[in-house]
Length: 227
Image (cartoon, rainbow, N blue to C red; front, side, top):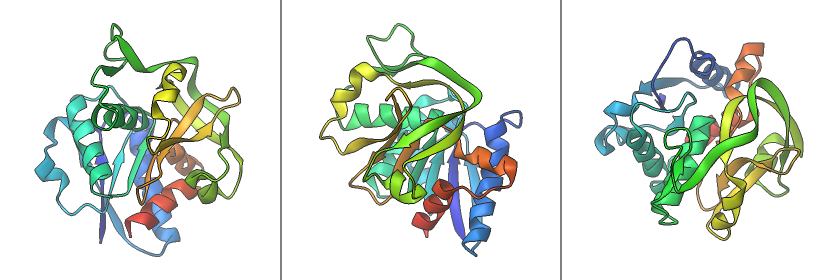
């Protein structure tokens, strides 16, 4: 059976935390297979635990996490070991931080939510917060996301106040981590790693498709990659 690690601090009052296991089950049914999601609290994460036969890693919403380094450790392990990775909302934001720290060597890169006085706010407040709303997302031509959706523009659900600071977009040029989607103002809403089997972070919450009983193409592609 496929086991998927859910990296985050489970809270039954968080809509995304309730939706994710159900969204995974919908995709498993669609693919005619079985899977088991396994929650891992960030404060318990070590390299040893992450190595325990997980077919994929999903870093979930509801940051700040109790242990930021725990989340970053899990993301790094997925990136360096070609383990399918999906980061949604807070998971996406922390995937940006992990890559900046360990690939771009920008140790000062930080998250404005946890360190509002950071000299380099790589993850900063959105120009317009997207809380309990839906918005249009434009998928970059030739991106993995465009291939997955089979479309150039989609509507996704959000509960997000932070994202990649536009002033630092240029730092990722020629790094392998590329913008996969933007909003109507051309601000980044998703990043994907080109030299990895499946490494995608999105600012929206595709798991909320479960609230309508719908299978989501991105989650299904994530599960399929894990197989």
